[in-house]
Length: 387
Image 1 (cartoon, rainbow, N blue to C red):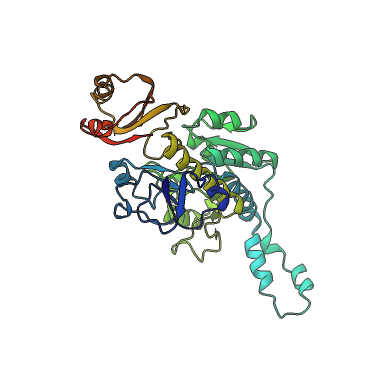
Image 2: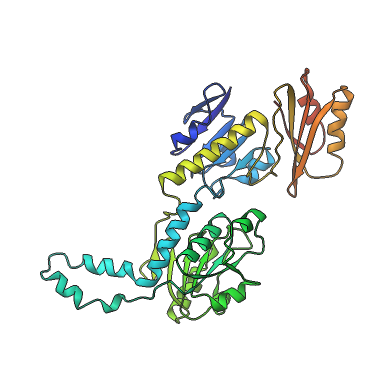
């Protein structure tokens, strides 16, 4: 039996994946094997010795001390793509909000409460809210992951001319991208032609302030910018300067902060990108499935700290899963432990992602008593599980 601690509101649809014959779920579990979480901070102090994995129902793992988990051999999962459609729909709304000053028009209309002849007042005051249509305009999509591809394809269907830029586009994303989307050879080429810019890149050291004063100087004057990616991707001081000098006509962001509130050309949405029942169900289901596959079978998919590594499970065998550092002279001693016990390795897979690696071995269904202790004696081995 595996004990799972649930933190925050996890969709019941996702929890159904963790059936009662193998899993016991509770928000009060003190010594869990797995954690399902949405947004609560998880620090090194929250990590117990029996913890094998943490699954974040969402993409952002900044609230989890991933480094501490990695050093302890705890796999941290996220759920990329689970909220892609929800974010796409909000981006499409953002495109229109950026163009038509709908936000300002609604606020003005609400200010007419208590007045008479409202329709006549409105007829005389429509000019301040005139804005361009998006059809026929150029949309630049920076980042062609699951959300970026959906946005690019939908914008094409809405009559926009779409340019995309992503030097690291995956094969899967490329297959799903509309043939009508033009691939920009460099970011500068996209900036020079885009009437609208939407950003869909992860938050990394390389993407922090990707859009700064230097970047905005390369933009087409009057560009309208959307950020439903991460707050830190765009430098707030730089975009306020770009708005004041006319480089940026409007900015729509899902990440409000004190320094951008109150600017009439900045529309702040309160982090609603993934706030739909469907997105929450998708992310919870994906996170629960990741925990299930790892705890029952040792398979890893969509981990942020260890490599993807999957072998179909064969019930007649035992499986040994080993987390270790990706250095020389580790795999040899691992297989040597099995050889010394005259154990036949039926199947083996080793994957790495830089500093760390993961090795799975299937052996005949025999006694493996004491093998965890023997494997842990090997230098650079971090954690061992026998399934």
